[in-house]
Length: 332
Ligand SMILES: [Zn+2]
Image (cartoon, rainbow, N blue to C red; front, side, top):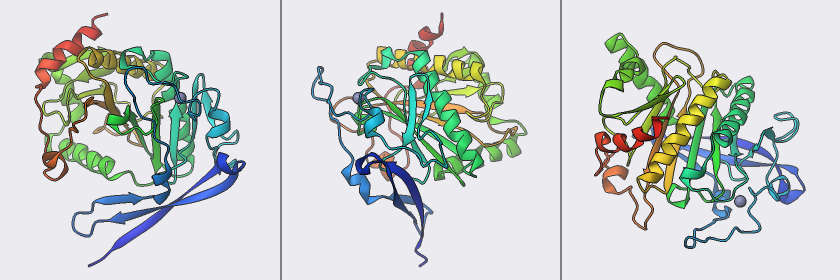
């Protein structure tokens, strides 16, 4: 049996060591049967955990992402990566993850508010976060890390260890496994059907799953959602990546995200995961898109044997039902 592993090394200027340069090794193991990937970084065991204690959770004075602490308590990139140490755009700041899962793993804090409900995010905050992320990915591209993954865990039930809202950014040379599988599926569809999946998906405008459209980004509830209340927002203008999106595109995407979050809040959702998928070059078979799904608010998880070991999803809400509620957020 071939036990394959390789490693990535993240360099950071560590605030716990007077911003001296330190490095962390991430061990990446490949499952010999399925090609599954495990990323192991034992330092992540030390991550601080912020918990919700009822509705009136006090703001911990030592939150590293709060405005009064961020410059002192978050790491900086080495000078050869980002000369100023951190990337700033308006109210957004990007610094390297103190507990990385990849060699280029950034964290983007895009609001000064420690805890924000889903109906309180502003278009400006999300846009400043996306703009700063675009700059992080642009720098990654210059260094050969051409694949750009933006993820968001909002609230502990969605996997956030810190409540303070933040995106996570991974720039890599070959893409995460899920990215690679997505690109392969899109290319396969294009070869098989002679059309892009994304131009076909635009036909959902006429279906009960249509949610709305905002500046060239179309939002639909997918036919087979991969999670509760899942929605997809994709570029109808064939933009392929965040890096390729101009200010108008970033604004449209941000506006759409904010509307979706407000609609989800109305549906009783309190925790979400979001991803933005990008492809490094403009190709006919891929469009930039975001996916957002709700995560449970109570004590019960929504990932059980079916999801974890069956690779299928068990749901109670059909997309046609919740698309109706989300749609009302797009009639401006
Ligand atoms: Zn905070």
